[in-house]
Image 1 (cartoon, rainbow, N blue to C red):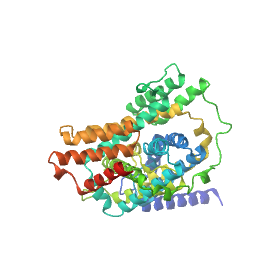
Image 2 (image 1 turned 180 degrees about the vertical axis):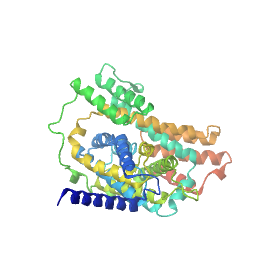
Image 3 (image 1 turned 60 degrees about the horizontal axis):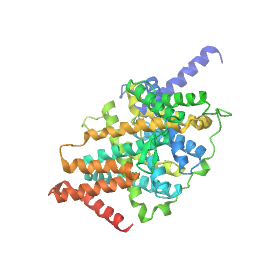
Image 4 (image 1 turned 90 degrees about the vertical axis):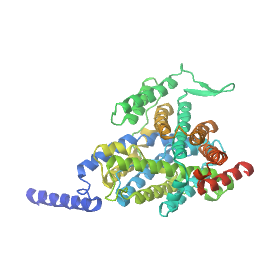
Length: 449
């Protein structure tokens, strides 16, 4: 074949591929291009790639194999992103949820002494319920049943819970027999590096520097290496192995124990409200409203998110959720599912770089935990602080999550206080049927389980 013929053939193939992508993602209708979507996908991936380091670090504390969790993290994120892009045509990235992974390890496994297999079973059940809710009207009924003040409080409470875990992982706070917690030892270089990790991320993120979280983690890892605290791996690339150690290992029957009801509800509610809140924010950022003023393909997006959580549980991850970092890609012009597919493909490629992830120390990722915690706590400003019967239950929900070291207990105490205070002050009309039912369930749990 001569050069001219080869050039013509390549041009025809490129044109056919572009036409295929146009039909699949409706690029022109969304006023975007392939190049823009690819760059948006790269941007989103870089801003959320820190989960590749953080999630295995947290989940391995629960007794799970680090290598297996790394592969599961990348694979569940890839499946979630690609499915979201192809099914819902949304420009968002998905991965195992921050906060939910901490609840999995520190509250359910370490705090309640369940095996990680049973904890995965709870994730699997909650994810199946989420799928059911997403394809029926049950989801909207549940969301409407829970007052907005408690929804915001749950997000903030998870943030506070994540924050105390991050501060502990960095060594900034430590246990004290006299005061429960106290300031850590700042003579320890690891503690200083943990604090530096957060400060770098906070400063860069505030200045809107591209990939701020990833830069902070890498910078502190390098600093640790210079101080002799980090050892380089023998190789930088390896085949993704070890998934068999977590694949289909969830203990569903063990999770069906009555005492696990609050845990399953915690996974469900936090995942559901975090996802819904993030998606609404993303829709506003990218102007994804149709002519009727409704968010385009929202039900499909919620279904894709819930299905991704089921897949995550099967291969060994906490609930998979939509990341707010997707806004970074949207700011770069991402408007269709092609952005999400690009993110997914990059997560697939990352499975081959486990040796690099394993050298990242806990104090480096702790800064990311603390930073994400503060982002989540910001939802407190949306609570109605002028109404006592609204803000007191909200405060109880948020505060009791870190103090009890349990998202589930925070939800139980917050929901019960809301219901009791509203009824006790003659505001029964503010309490939905769903809240009354949950109150009965939670009272039974506290009394008999």
